[in-house]
Length: 383
Image (cartoon, helix red, strand yellow):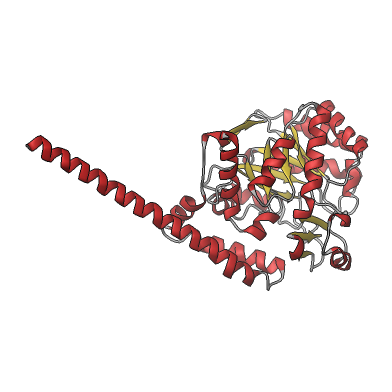
């Protein structure tokens, strides 16, 4: 009889445990829905009434404060983190817990690494960083194209300088993988550009996991000229040679523009092989206004700048596919441009990307996009 009672007691305890677990699970789900709906129906409409840069600074301030309140980090991590063994990747010698990263440009100065890591990114890319601080181009220089789910920017490598970013990186607590996107100062001529990239490499080297050589931004005068075959080869050889002197060399990647011709992409494949860098990020923003359907006239009125977001999706995927096929899968590619759903990310991976990055899509869809993409990828890999 005592054994029977004991059995009933264990069953009751198990039921009680499951009940508490289910209540907690339902509560977390409800909280997640509330937070996502708050962004969609309250925070995003409010932010979109402000100038984009003002909204950016406010969001960073809000995250810095809210995410560091007692108990909030655990809640945010629980809501947005989704990890699965199927998502793990080893690319250019680094192990990524998942293939979804944050593209450069959002956290240029490494101000919010710990907070952004709570959203579940597999890696975060900072920059573009330059040797000296610079203000970038005159404001306004960032614009929304809401009908296209796109952004237009001509920021011009505004950042506080690589040494200021290192001060923050030294204090970070999260273990998320960090990429360092590096460039040259506006006042540095193309003839002297190599020294700027080497300076950034030297200062950043102990604090990032990989480097990105950015010669593809359309917003620094004459920068894209460094994508020409001979200057690019010379630059990459110099960066790789300096990197190879280190006790623990870091992967070196090249970020390219979506506006390159097939002939220029052929040169990229050749250069990657000759310089033996570790991979390519495809792509940066586009200066091609023909990718727009609704806001073409508005974009022309707004002036110079690169377009990111949904209109870039098709072209960036084309570039990924071309590089992958032309190289025979000879080097890893990080796909970025127009990812606003799991399906978009899958298209990049099917085209030949090893990893993907988001930025503009998260502005329009909210922070839940990261988890949504990861859940979709996990289902894709298991199907």
